Structures are given as C-alpha cells and as structure tokens.
Image 1 (tube, rainbow, N blue to C red):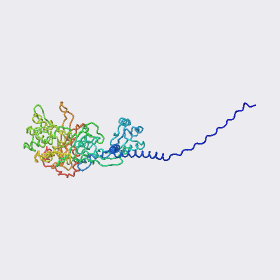
Image 2 (tube, one colour; image 1 turned 180 degrees about the horizontal axis):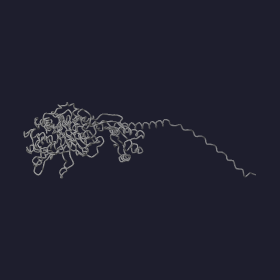
Image 3 (spheres, rainbow, N blue to C red; image 1 turned 90 degrees about the horizontal axis):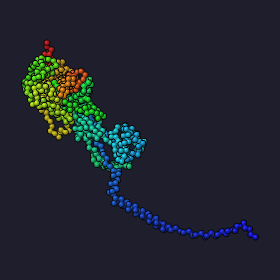
Image 4 (cartoon, helix red, strand yellow; image 1 turned 180 degrees about the vertical axis):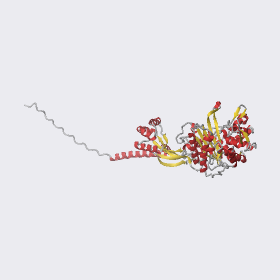
Length: 597
C-alpha cells in the first residue's frame, strides 16, 4: 500500500541549448563614426567660414566694442610764473578713483573699507554705487592724495574687488597760496578757470587732452596700446610782472598792519616806474585757493581793482600840478588857510595854519589851500586832468570785474563840488588807478599803461596801448621836490621816511560814505601814495587801510609805516643804490623856515 505523505519527485527539465554569439559589424561602425566626424568637420568648417568670411566685420566691431577703447591722454594746464620764472600755479599729475557699479555692487561688504580709504562717508559710497548700479562707469573720487590712492589699492587687493579703476588727471596747485590768491584765482574740478587770471586767460592756459586706442582685458585694464589717435596739447604758460619776493614782503606787512589796527581790510600796489609793470598787488582779507574755495566772495575780491575809495588828500598834488602847468602859481605862492566859506559850506583844516606857500599846503595837507588853488582854474581844467590821468576809466590791465571808478562830468558840478574834488571827495578811484596816476608824477609827466604780464599773450589781439604825456617834466620835478617835504619831520608822513633815500609822497585820510546820511563820523580809509627815490623814482606804491579801528586812522600813522617797510625791502631786492641822503635845496629851505620863530 502506498504512503500518502510521500510527495512525487519532479523531474528536471533539460536546459535549452546555448544561442550562437553575433559578430560586431566593424565596418558599419567605422562608417558611422566617420560620418559623424565628417559632419562635425563640415559644421566646424562652415562655422569658421561663416565667421571668418561672412561675419568678419561684425565680429571685429563686437570685439572692438568689448575690448578696444579710446583712452584719454591727460595734458598739463599751462603754468603761471612770476617775472623771474618762479612757479605760482602748477598742474601736477594725480590719480582719480573710478568705479564700474554693475560689478562693484556685488562687493557691498567692502564698502566701509573703501569709504574709509577715500575719506568718504560710507552712506555716500553705498548710495552712489547702488543708485548707478546699471552703469559701467562713475567717478568715486577725483584727484585723490597719494595716501588715499595707496589705501584704495590695498582695499582692492585684500577684498579682491572688481569694478574699481584708477585714472590719471592733473590737479592745480598754488605754491603762493593766499599771497597770490586774488591775482591768480583758481580752477574748478574740471580744471577750468573760475577767478582771477585763471578765468580771464582760461583759453590760453587750458590744455587739450590727447586720445590713444587701447585693448582692455576682462577687468577693464589696459593690456596693449594700439595707436595714438591725437597727441595731447599742453596749455600755454603765463609769465607775470609780479615779483614773488616783493609780493610776499608786501603781503606780510599789509596783513600785519590790518591786524595791528584791527582794520576791515586793505590793499597795496607797487609799480615799476620805467615799465609800468605791477610788481606787487596784495589784499586783505585773503583766502587759500588750494583748499578754501567755497568761502564768502568778500574774501575772493581783488580789492585793488574792484573796490573804489574817495582818495582824499592824495589828490592835492594833482591840483597843484594843474595850476603849475598853467603858470597860475609857483612853489612859493602864498595863501591864507584859515576857514573858508563856499556858500553855506565851510572848508577848514585840522589846524588853522594861517599863511602857507604852495609847498606848505602840500606839506601840511591843507584843504583850504587846495580849494583856493583849484578855484583859480575852471571846472573843466580840473576835470580834464583827472580824466586824462585815468580816473573814471578802467586801467586796461585785463582783470575781471575791474571797476571804472567814478568821475562825474564837470557840467554837473556845483561850486562846492568843485572844491571837494580838489581834496579828494566827490570822486572814487581804485588803488591801481591811484597808483597809475602817481606813476605820471614819477615818470616826468608820462602816463604809461600798467601791466600784469612781462608779455601779455592777448595783447597781440588788440591794438597795443601807448604811453602819452600828461604833464611837463618841469612841473612834475618841481612837484616831486615839494612832495619830499611830506616825508619829513615837518610833514604828515614822517613815518614813510626810508633811510638813505629821498622819498616823496602824500597822505590821505577820507571818511567813508554812509549813503544818504552823508559821511560816517568814525569810519575812515587811510591812504599813502608815494615814490622812491624822489629825484629819479624807481617804484610807485599805494597803501590803503580800510576802516582802522584801533584809535589811529590818519594815513601818515596807519598807511605810511607800511610804505616805509615795503619800499625799503623793494629797494634792497632790486639793488637800487641810495641817492643823495642830503635833503634837496627846497626841502632844506622849508626846514629852515619851519624852524624860524
């Protein structure tokens, strides 16, 4: 009997027999590979042909657009020098920091370090970059210092910045600073003249930058110079008539006087008698054109040319000259100088000097005597001399904003105005106009044009001005001898005496106008005008101190000492030999007369 728990044994199926392996088609694969390579070669060749032949101009334009630039070649602005070639305004190469905001925007973490290196506010740097984030070029800071440029390079290296560039520009520098500021002026950030001679002669001084074609790398750095498109043209240099040494001396003494007398300001002008050259022209207050360019315009005015004053008693020598020319008086002609009535007005002197000769009228600065001499002439006679001296006309020195002064036509004068014009009221002049008038007395009656240049580069564009005779040599020589008495122990300007030289001049103390209220009772302009040596003058100088406030205000006390110090230095600097230290015969006679009981 069979066992039911026993399972039937399954028989294994026989394995199928193995399939035969196929042989690979090498030839087919080779053809396929060659076809692919051939197609790739055709495509590559076609691409090369298309780009090299068909797209040549287009690709060249694109390459130039991305990597070729016309870079500016900076050019130097013309120098300004003194008469001896000493630099007064120079342009020095400096670096300017530029930025490519679309790249630099990714380095915001470096903005604080970059701002610190440039000495700028972080918020300003961040705002400037973010506001221009789509632009490819902006200025971060122009004309930086060497330390700032060095610090920026260090930040670029440490932070691996992209988008910061360096360009070369020129920065204007003024070695004379505030001493020459009013004459030379200054330029703006674009190197264009803004004040003074920098403004007037900008077309002469300005430079024309050149262009060169360069190849830039991916970081916008120049890797190769292709060609020079145009050469840079530097500006033309200017040589002034000013003497640097004398200008410094004049500025120092004027500033000291303004400080000592607590004055509002002052001017000083020195002219060369033989040529009419302006050797020194200084003003107070002043400013530093290297840094202080945003201050009040009051400090930037060249007061010697723009501000007018009533010249006061400095005009009395011209009244005497006009009368001498007409043979109406002689040096010994005598006049009573007691108070003198003209209509409802009274003319008087500081003291009643009684009888004075013409020389004494000059010595003591008598208003009454000057009025009586003027009344010997017509209104037209006096006006004509003033007009020919240049009052009411610009000097033509070519400075911006030069004032014409005020000289009303004689047809509008009244009797008292005729009188006031004889002692320096009722008309206004600049310090340079007054100096040019005194130049006539020093040059034996010849009026010469005043010059700020050894050779004016613009003079060729206009008709040259010529010297003209205003007074006879005999008149001016006699007048200079009379004016020597002013600079003596008996005169009003003994503090203007220069050791070893015969000096001549005239003081002036004029009240300042208070508008419709007339003249201020406590505001004066103290003036001294003169020349040295008196016999054959070499220099003419005018000193004006505006509103001295320390008690003294007379021209012989406030302005004359400045004349003495500056003139002494000028004579030494230019090697002018001392003239006869003995006083002239007329001066000696005057002294003997003053000493007589």
